[in-house]
Amino acid sequence: MRNGFKRASVIGIATVALAGAGVASAAWMAESYLNASGQTATLAAATGSATIESDLFPGEKGDLTGSLTNPNRVPVKVIIDGVSGIDSECASLAGGPGALGDFELGAHETKTVQMLNVVKLADDAPDTCQNVSFTVRLHTQTTAGN
Image 1 (cartoon, rainbow, N blue to C red):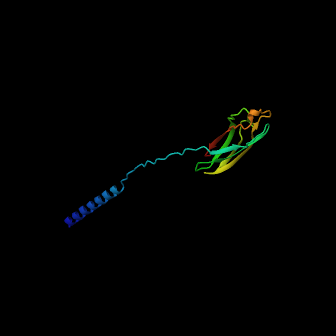
Image 2 (cartoon, rainbow, N blue to C red):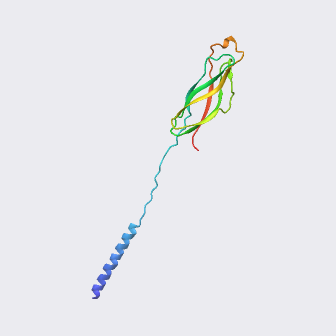
């Protein structure tokens, strides 16, 4: 019987040793790190066009009418912060530079803009001011985010 008992003990110990080895291999762990890359967007300025009431007579003021479009896929705030660059000795800026308004533009939205009395033809405009073209620069700032 002793031989049977020894044989059973050896088999039992071998079984426990193999089971322990299996548990140890199941507890192994491997880690990895994944790199994810991305890119930030570029904010595009609002675009558009505008015209000023034509056919001004001496002393009259002209209104600016136009449209601004948000080319971005996110809403933006547009600030019209000045009118400048009049290129005529006959007309002047009636309102002068300064903050002229701000508004929200949704993604890809277009809005009509109207500003009253932007330019003025001089009260004493000489005959050489007849049929003269001029340009006014409308400056905008476009911001996005909180």
